[in-house]
Amino acid sequence: MSIAVLALFAWLVIIVFANVPKGLSLTEMVFLYFIIAILTITQFTILDVNLHWVPVTRSVEGSFAIYICRFIVIPFPILLSVCVLNSHMKAKWRWVLSAAIVIFLCMGDRIYLWAGLITFNRWNEFYSAFMYAASIVLVWLIARWFLGLEKGEFKKT
Image (cartoon, rainbow, N blue to C red):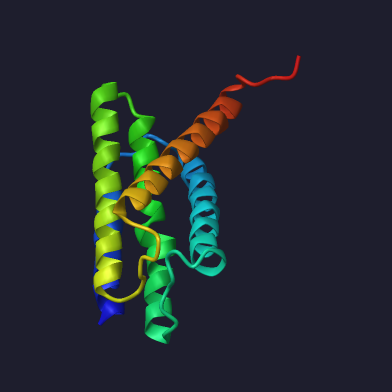
């Protein structure tokens, strides 16, 4: 059941991501996707294996559902938020949309809890929201650095 729910959730994320104009090239998005994937996999592994704050289910179906979350449901909204932050909208709207994406990611956490995929031990929604927001800001700074490299802003003197 949990894999079906998360597959539907993943399709929703992919459809929204595909229909929203991004303003970044394919190379930039692929680079940022892999940075996000490395960052999120590392964060969630530390929270699960090392700290035992957010233990993950050990069932086979649950493991596949968690893989869907970690490779589709979490990275694509973060990438979309970075695209929004790099857009030419007013700063207020960029940050409001990014906050909405953080709320969406926290709603995803509620679905994972409901499906029994994760449990919170010494962890709560506030920590999740802070972690997602920090991830978005970190990836946004990496994106700005990467875009600056393409424009030649960081040349050796």
